[in-house]
Amino acid sequence: MALRDRLRPYGPATASVVLIALAFPPLNLGLLVFVALVPWLLSLRELDSKQAIKSGYLFGLLFWLHQMQFVQPLVAKWTGNVLLSLIPWFSACLLGATYFAFLGFVLRRCLKSKREWLIPVAWSGLEVVRSFVPILAFPWGLISTPLYRYPPLIQLANYGTQYLVSAWVVAASVGVVLLFSGTGWNQLRYHALVFLGLLGLSIARYTAPEVGEPVTVTIGQPGVDAAFSDPEEEARKVGVAVAELSESALAQRARLLILPEGMAMGGTEVPPDVPFELTPGLPVLFGGSRGPQPSYQSAFAFDGEWKYADKRRLVVFGEYVPLRGTLPFLDAFELPTGDLRPSKRTSAIQVAGMTVGPMLCFEGLFYDVAADQAKNGAQLLAVMSIDDWYVGTGAPEQLMSASVWRAVETGLPVARSASLGHSIAVDARGNIVARAPFGVTYPLRANLILPKQAERFPGIEVVPIALAIFLLGAATMPLPRTKAGSPDRV
Image (cartoon, rainbow, N blue to C red; front, side):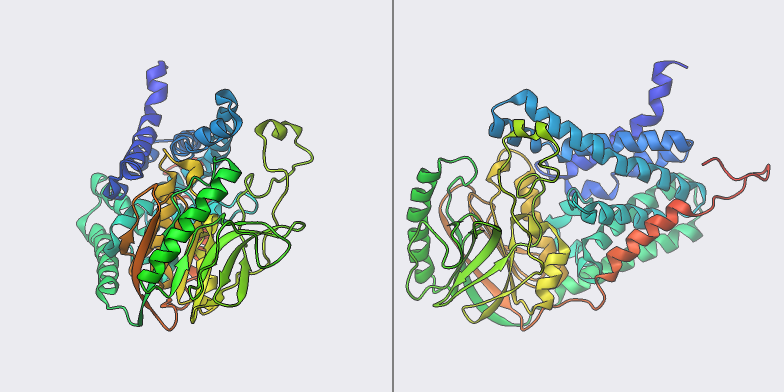
């Protein structure tokens, strides 16, 4: 067989990845996600099991090369070695591709068994698994992510988290596949009715008014590079910036000034060591490190009394390094020398007469942290972040987009402060109601509606678990028998 003939089955997988890449930052052709999987799904019908696994692995490899591209410039700048920076980027992609090799196997089984309705839940089930697998948990590159720009389309997240919206998105591609496959209208119309019914439910929630107390907060963006600056120079600039932001917050009559992560430089307990003066009469919330050993990443609040809440979800290889003592080659990457310790629980903070749910940087990606804050009685979610490591890639925007999803899932407004940006305010329907210009010192005034409690659909946490179970079911279900009486090839 000619090489071109051998490669032909894998072209559609590449085409689907290209469509997904076009939908994500920085190009942001977000609506393409509704048809992005069509080429790959059509091709899987014609592949045997081994080919489907290979096709899935190729899909996953290309997918992660795009999604994880931010790793290469980060490591290159950190180590000063471009060749060394390729190792973690490629390694992560080669490992992550195995998820999609398994998914290719599963999706082919769904197609062969004529259970196409399982495809959306199997896809989303895999998103759940890779988001919460121990040690490597990373909810990144979810297929619904680009839709954050279209809040009327994503309100299903309030009923079943972002993963339910991902299933709905994939259902659109499945509908197109059924259309191209000659499926009769009687079957296809039910698929279309369910899809459009869920769209109507989303739009209905979006148009419902918010109920609560109007409140003004100032989201302070220092405009200081907190990733690659000289520490002394950074501290000096932060001090100047926070003084300016505090003055503006008072002028805006803000109830609270929210600053990003990285404002506290350590200390044994509270009050933390900070490079700025507190302003009398102005409550403030910010992130930083706490304690020598053990050390935590924490949110600190002051309104006449100090409070803090420790971070629960840490960044692997950033805030802690697994197998540090057994992998000597890690020394070449100049990783941080001390591991942070995760908190055993998610805690809210009472500050300025509000219950605020702090989420520190990486935590903003996790729906369960926001859900726990909603259970804690949070009226406002505050995301405090440092995205400066990834400037020049699509990562800062994808990190920012998570705040929109957390707002819709919980029915709570979100205030996001980042050192260089993106700093935004999001209402409970996922609308970005205020945005600071990137890279400058900016006091972002945010007028938000503060509810008495989160607007959460009962049992929302069950949906991701159910999706993961459906993935397992799709992988193990029996295939129909062929005319010869034996099961279809697996």
